[in-house]
Every structure is written in structure tokens, then in C-alpha cells.
Image 1 (cartoon, one colour):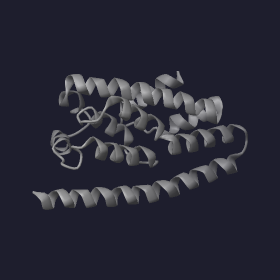
Image 2 (cartoon, rainbow, N blue to C red):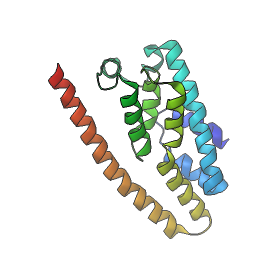
Image 3 (tube, rainbow, N blue to C red):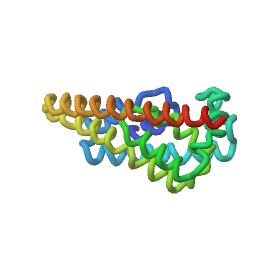
Length: 179
């Protein structure tokens, strides 16, 4: 049931992932909860990636504006696989970024499926480990450790989002200057 919730959470990207990760930690502990979340992330990324490759933009128009999709597809910065991998690595590594929407976009970009699946699954580690750790510790009665885990995650997320926005702003200005 938890795996189904994790699949649903990524397939419907407006649902937040942290509560499900927290629940995984509560139900199965940090390690096993993390493995269930990783399995769900891999399976849902696999389904979405290949559906987008097969059906194209029509498959993702429900979640993203067509103009934004076109802008991303035509981005010079996201036209090279190495840059795409770096971009996804950063986005998936930083807790709090809109990872699940980027799973839909990946199928439109020139990135190898195997590389994307590795990145989209395992770069979620900081977010997943903090949430499953917090959930596991709350069940064990260590609510202080749960709070500390989330304070650290929020601090890292804030710093990460600041860096992400700086990179995004820098590359957006760079592309505008090239046109």
C-alpha cells in the first residue's frame, strides 16, 4: 500500500512527497522505508519517462503549460546530455525542489534513460533519508531527533533552493543574451 502511495505521489506531481516518506519511516524504519521510497521513485520515473517518450508533450500538458514545455525543449542549456544530467543531479539532490514535475520533462530531453533513472532515484537521498529518519524516530519516541532532522532538512533546502534559483537565473539570463 505504501509503495502504491509513493507511485501515486510522483505520478500526480502536485502531491507532496515528504508525508509519504515520513510515513515510510514510521511504518518500516529508516532503512526499509527508504528502500520502499526508492523503489517507488524508480518505478514511477520509469513509467512517466517512457510514457512521455511514447506520447510526447500531450502526455504532460495536464501538469505543465505548453509554452513552458516548449521553452524547456528549446533551451540551449538543456540540449546537451551532460548539462541535463548536472541540472537533474542538482534538482533531485536538493530537498524541496519540484523534482516530480521534472520527471515528466526528462522524457522530452536528450538524456539516456538509465542515467536519468539513477539520478532521479538515488539523488533523492537527502530528502528521503531525513524524512524516513524523522518518521522512524517519532515512532520510537525520539521526537527531538525528528525535529532536528527536519530543521537540518529545511536549512539545507533553503540553501539549496537559493543556489538552484541563482543557477536558474544565471542560465536564463545567459540564454536571453544569446537570443
